[in-house]
Image (tube, rainbow, N blue to C red; front, side, top):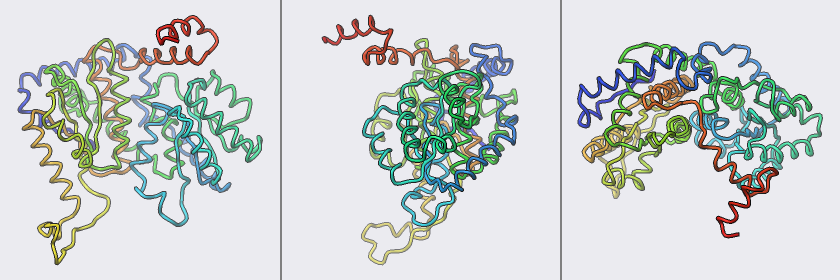
Length: 447
């Protein structure tokens, strides 16, 4: 279960202030639970852990098994933002760090991602990889017209059709899209792709426990039932209306610190497997809270690695930072440090200690140093990295995000600001209907 510890904030706040913000968080909790707040038509994520049908998982497993029979060893998952970050986080967290380099027969295909950038080199290099492998694809988009994934899907679809034939391509492409409308839904019906539905009441950044995340995670060989079980446990805990609700605790404290000038929150992990948890979390909070001139800026680091690059600023830079540390209590592997007769590195005092003990002491030492340097510390802990605990983390952060945004007084479930760059890009690329905007932009650019 996810646990929250706010002890690292005690020298920056007092009990009366925290109690005030717990009351604000409980009011926001009531708004979220009663489904009366802004964006209340996007709350389908709230009960996914306990309402997801077993048939969805078995349908995903059927695709996994059919592709295994075809010898598929590479699955290209195409999506951007919430359509790929949750799955990417899960696959990175649960995979062996060197799975690509290890020899031997693999039990599951390699999962790679596309459609999350506009790099020509990336597409070309993806093509190089596909030419060496047995390929299938999952394309994720409600509309099918989002620029980045739509471009990537053109290339991947054309490659699969050319390599395996149009009829076989229909067996190797699965779409996760809208139930009734949109370009991708129309194409899926036309070509006979198997499809999964993105519900209208679930926004992209809250979709990791829908087919958006479930299908790639199952294809990668991981236990989705255990992930949903962990998420269900947090759904239960985070539905309790009290100050011990971890989502209430986290939302209350981060907003209290924000009121005191802590404008940037850094999500910290001490295990490199959680790097993409930070990427997923940044979108969840940045897109949910950053509007109406408000919002805590989300950033992420991986320690101890980034202590050798960002540590100086965190310790002594402008005092606008807070840190949320994701602590993993137990390592899944065991290795102790051996004695070296020469001891030239001076590390024999560590002989017999587990490497993870060194990591834990680095975490504790950094916490104390950063508190002394004026950086409050929130702690979010799980027992270990596995499907159960990762599911709990996903749900905890989602529920806390909804509460936190309502404390701020913003709609957690819209993202009106992301359209500005798209309109400019379309105009500059010459999309029909954008001629006047293109003229104005080119004048600004001196063209």
